[in-house]
Image (tube, rainbow, N blue to C red; front, side, top):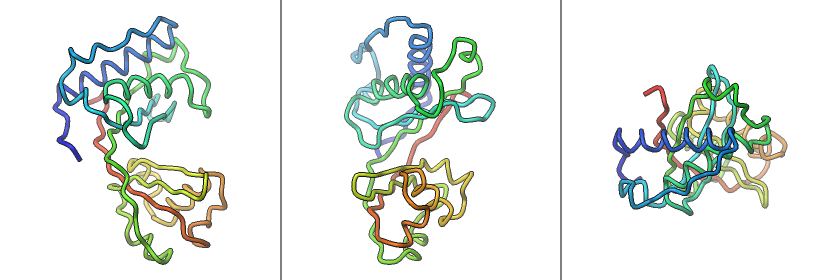
Length: 191
């Protein structure tokens, strides 16, 4: 992974995410970022997930697995997506803005995981360290490393990942899947 972000860079990203969410919810026009005014690290391409919670409960989560735009723009795009476009939730309402907590996860590039058996797959996963992507043809799903807190056993983690992509939860035991892992630099507003 590239160097960790400084506390100031993290604060800037959280502020940009908050502003983007407020603009979207309040239907204000989004002001394009002036990248030249941002630190170099925030102008570099980066992939992020933005997770929104209210009182510890998920309220939205949207992101990208691979970098395709500057980090600051990626955070703004996914902050708006998490607030307004997560299909699991209605758009965030004005009355919820004060209760929303923002978490940003900056991803490393996914790396293919080589394995032969379901047992070997479980052994190679690193709970609380690895985010995991499963692919089966056109279907795919991912869990950030933070999901290990709720699903600490590799078999349960993999079952839920298969179900998330619309497959039989035991698919990972029945046939080889494409598996990728990545790590995240995670930070949130409470820091």
